[in-house]
Length: 205
Image 1 (spheres, rainbow, N blue to C red):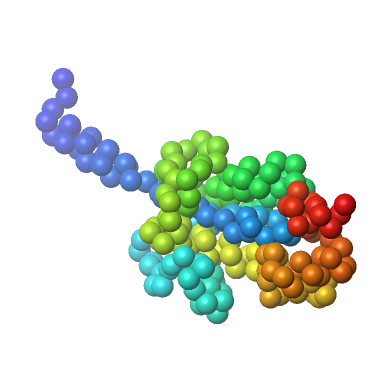
Image 2 (image 1 turned 90 degrees about the vertical axis):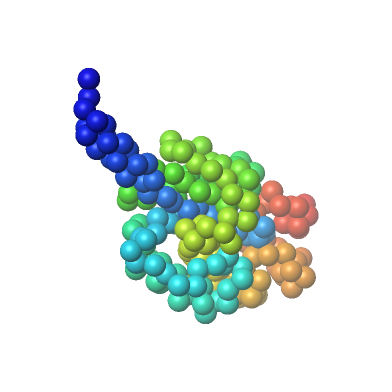
């Protein structure tokens, strides 16, 4: 029979271990007509806090860029992953997004005890996970992930703009603005456009 002292020590250890590492996960690029969907996973360091974390959509581009570098420098670990245009077209955008999220979590250097995902759907993971609606404005680690994913994808769009300046990817970031739709009608689709999305499919007919 265990002594009371031993039981108290064991209980203290269980309490200490229970929280574990928490990873936040979010994506960028579900809605655009072109490019990969990007997901990020972040485990923040409670001893090295980052001021100003918020839903990436509510931050200016300059603020996102600054926070991106700070997150990469201060987080315990982080990972950015993609699902390609081909995977989006073959799997559909929801399943491709979940695939990118799974890749982001699997790419973490440290294995989290629990994963908190923005939204109401979860990727298939081998760790405990919870979906949180509007998590990017509620959970700092998810906010950090949203910033990494958004900045990574925006940078990708700037690279694409250098290849295809006539489409205006530096401005609309792949979303179906009138300028983007007009460019599609005038120039056709690039290899980076999502053929399964109706505005692109109509151009390809």
